Amino acid sequence: MSAPYMLSASILSADFTNLGEQIQEAEKAGVDWIHVDVMDGHFVPNLTMGPFIVKACRRVTQLPLDVHLMIESPEDLLEAFAQAGSSILTVHVETCPNLHRTLQTIHELRCKAGVVLNPATPVDLVVPVLHMVDLVLVMSVNPGYSGQSFLPEVLPKLTFLRREFEKINPTAYLEIDGGINSSTLPMELNAGANVFVAAHAIFDYPGGINAGVQQLRSHFPG
Ligand code: DX5
Ligand code: ZN
Image (tube, rainbow, N blue to C red; front, side, top):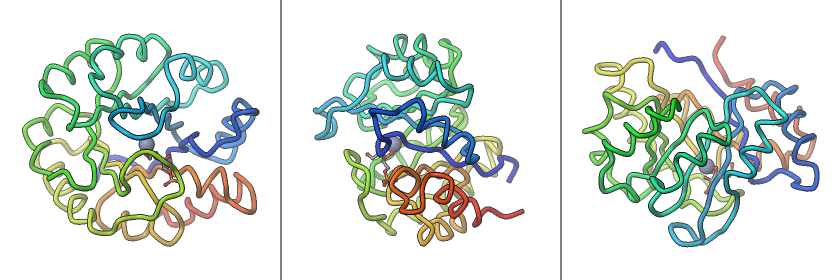
């Protein structure tokens, strides 16, 4: 595998009265990316953040902003999210009838392009675009909230995608999101994931953000 292991801190569980400090604390603790969960109240039941929050994150950190778009018609907002300072824009396959075009648009906006699969979505749906993505994100909870339990039945998708990436796109990232903690991370790592999103296990960790990050990172090889 040529891509390194990454920890992406989801601010969904951060204390929004101190968002800047929380991001800087996570950065200091050693997270690699900041994950921003954008929800529209239609594609997923919850309603969260727009480009304005991405712009605020960009002001407090130079880390890559990993923007997960859980919204209908994401193509309408790609430019706004790119201009706000996103580094990676990830769209759900379930929301993109013209997936090649959407991914091309993300590249034209000079962002890395990712595609996401919900837990019940078959992995075959992303096979036609594996050669052109920078990242595939496998959801291991039904999206909408942080703090849910990991669904182990998605692990075979990671194994399949790792094998495909080794053949056709070895530098692409394979990301997993939902219910990641110190107990589940080794399973996802063994199945081939190399980017791990965590909200609850970082921002709600009983010993604090730094201890939560160290606990997760302790499983990374080398
Ligand atoms: C869920 C979001 C996740 C969420 C993860 O809809 O996409 O990024 O914040 O939260 P935890 O790590 O608490 O499961
Ligand atoms: Zn997410």
